[in-house]
Amino acid sequence: MMYLISGAECFDPTALGQRDVLVAGSEVVAIAEPGSLNVDAEKIDASGKLLVPGLVDALTHPCGGGGEGGFGNRTAEMDVETFVRAGVTAPVGALGTDSIGRSLDVLYGNVMGMRSQGLNAYMLSGAYRVPAPSLTGDIARDIYLVAPVVGVGEVAIADHRGTQPSAQELRRLAAETQLGGILAGEGGTVLVHVGAGDARLSLLRETLEGSDLSASVLYPTHVNRSTALLDEAAEWALRGGYVDITVSTTPELIAAGDITADQALRRLLEAGAPAEQITLSSDAGGSLPVYVDGELVGLTAASPDSLSDLLLGLLTGHPELFPVALAAMTRNPASALRLNDAGAISVGSRADLLLLDPQEGRVDALLSGGRWMLRDGEFLA
Image (cartoon, rainbow, N blue to C red):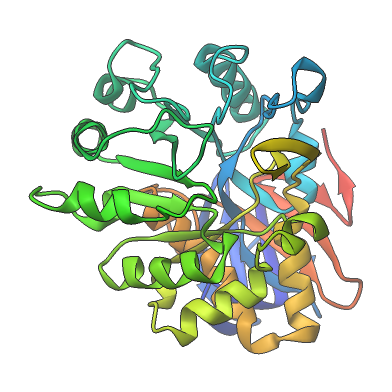
């Protein structure tokens, strides 16, 4: 099937102005000036809308997360429709805190299920713990041989729930992960969960010292927990590393010190962090626990809607941040995780396309791998 999407303001994610985009099968086959393509294809009038790449959500928990307060606090498994309505075509699944009650086998099955339904889904091996659990018994083997596995994570540091890895342990894990990515030609990144501990990114800096690793192998997330952590994240980005802001937060977490995504993004930019090294993720499906003196006092579940809600909000509230945030949800996380077929609109790329309706303030349509999964706000199972 061929589709000609016309009349939209196109971002690849860089602003291109009005463009006609032709999709044939699962690929984008042409990007041209409006009205210049004379082809026999179904025409989609997208006037007044924005055409952007499908969102790449670098940290999600599709088989559920949480459990810090017992079995009754585990969050539920997520379905494809939830990601589609949020505009996400490439969710990256991880286990997180609980790699005992929820295993990598379960995560693998969930990710493969999303792939079978049309999403360009990926997963991370490992979890909070070090030594990291794996599917095959070897981290590099997981990344090299198991198609949806693109890295390891989220490994916890500066957090009382982690296993307090040493710099040598983290260095060895990063080297194994990088090797798997080199052999596979894709992936090879360690996503690092940074807790609220005072150590912040000191372990990452120690890990690099005396090694041949680059900062880009270690990819810290949740860097908007505090201004002090954000300032260290800016320095990490200046060293060539990627840093990830968690968009889903709550008033309780903000009261405890978290910084909203738009404020965190602005602070990183003002500190000199290169825009291309900054990413935004939702932590979808994960629990958002609130601790006081190490004791759990509250918990909610994160949603991928936080990404598209932020984009649509920036269009009206802070339009100057919109292109930066869009790249941080598309091209940048794809680069950070070394995903070859996600995060951009270009000739020959996978047709993962998102239509935003700024007037209605909603995700209007989503094409994933050339297949319509949402049209006019209606989910197509």
